[in-house]
Length: 287
Image 1: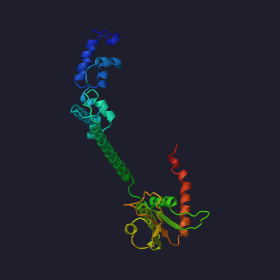
Image 2: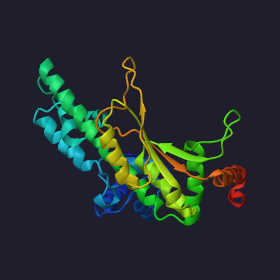
Image 3: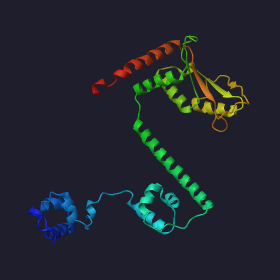
């Protein structure tokens, strides 16, 4: 019998009492409060060999994967093969099955095939995660107010649109981009500003080696058929290796606003208004 000083002198009697409470389904805290034990080391010794009740265990999302991994390992599958089946990391698999016997050694061809399937499974999982993140972010935006679109359009133009410079002081609104969605947002902003669509001119700029007709049809479907001017063809240099070729390449669309000097000056003023306001934004909520 283990003898302890003070109120814990009868160790065996105390252990019998603690074990009985444990088997009734009490948690460590409940046992400690019931028996008035304030020594965690002693409580650990009293509960040695007694598993906690199920209700005290935290749910673990990987419990099912762990059980499945062990089942697959017992069938002779390698870490790579288990990873393909379950989509979890090799480090987790190693922790779960390292006490189980190893499967027979595989050939180089088998290892290569398994590695390829594992990489494909990893890429598929990453793409699913990527799409999930994009969809969640998409939902965060929701509806836009006119003011939000107004400010967004100012920033969009000042980053992508034509700007007057010292050696080129022209004040005119020209916006060019290869992304149909950027063009769509720009046009929505132009509509918000009350610019008549009759003042817009569209010009395709594209390499002569591309499918010009297909590109023209593409942009006409994006913005409508009216207002298009003659396409500008960029001379192709055969010594230059270009990546923007083939299917999906439709060149850039330039959107010009006629008689836009006054509008340009307003855009410039709006932009610098944003520049001045941004450092002072939400000062009341800053520490």
